[in-house]
Image 1 (cartoon, one colour):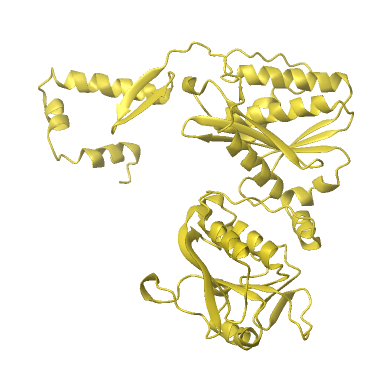
Image 2: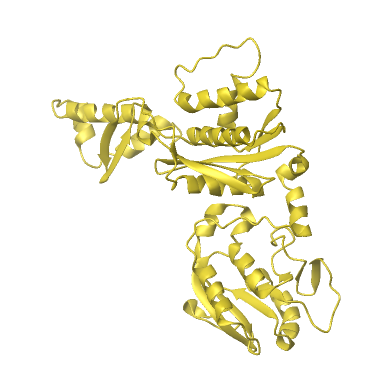
Amino acid sequence: MEIITDIKKKFHATKYQGDTGITIPPFFKDAGRGKERIWGDDTVTETPQPMIINWPGLNDKEKAELIPTLSITDNWILLTHPLGTRNKSQSPLKESQRIARAEGKCIRWWREGKDKLATHSMTTEVWINTRGQIPEATRMVIQEALEKENTKDAPSFGTEDLEVMHRSGSEAGLLGIYNFPGAVYATDGSNDKGIMGAGYFKLDEHRGGCCKLGRGKEGNSSNRAELGAACLALEDAKRKQDRKPVIFLSDSACFLSSSQKWIGEGKSPSMHGNPDADIMRDIVQLLCERIEQGLLTIFIKIKAHRSDPLNKLADRWADEGRQSKNIRWSLPKNRPIFYWTDNSITHHSPMISTVKKRIDLQVSQQQLKIHSGSTAIFLTREDSSRDLLGKFHKDSSV
């Protein structure tokens, strides 16, 4: 969607052609498919409004309906994949010229609301009318937008009427979050390749914060990152020193369930055995301070990866946290760390089930060398369908 956003801003487009009413980006004043109006004004004017066309999003009939308008106007810009054989360029119209081409991200990734689809590389071309002219600076901006290698697009959070309506229909919008009289924080954690990041986004001030979580060698988890994000948001709310109620949105059920045992009277939970006690201790302290001051604090679980704008913005801050130089909760617990190599890749971890399995495997392999019974012969002989036997022990239907 970032490609569409950049082109819209530079081209001052107000109309979009292609896709469906559900998948069309919500920041266009008018949208349609061929002669069909999906929303907005379909009044014919002497000067048609600037338009962006997603050519693959139209069927043959809709393309045929649109071609006469494109032939006589020059205030449109068209995105398509190469139409020629073997990925070669081919003009979609007689009256068109190509201004950009790159191995960009799939321009229809947002249909399923999955950020990972944005990493699907697909050659994308941008065409305009042969009579049209755009400044070289604008063309370079479009080319750079196509070539961006970010795995996730920047979420759109505009103020146009349709965007406000779109957010009102999201999960947070249906809960009335955007009309909440207090402060709203969206929090998220990120754990990738053993590096953990935590981030939050504050709605009313449209800003965020993040950090990297330390002690990753002693074990990393998404729940630890989620706890770190919640603690950062609570700390930020404390710094504001206002008496507003606060809502925290999180997509982590594990975080909410791990916090649940600290809620209510007559409970005396302990930090003993909690792998993330260093963060949980800070969270409990901050919540106790808010309770003593009579401040309302609400935690709400929202669904992850459903294109909720607040959740996506928190997710981007969490990703940035993994690269941050601000490292929090890094005091080691001095747990023993085990190292092993598998397929030329070195792994490290504290004593968990994975490490126990590796130890059992190493011991069994050493024991095989000193035994010569039928079992040892079977386990050391090549091509004895041991892979199928392993699958059978996991699932007898194999």
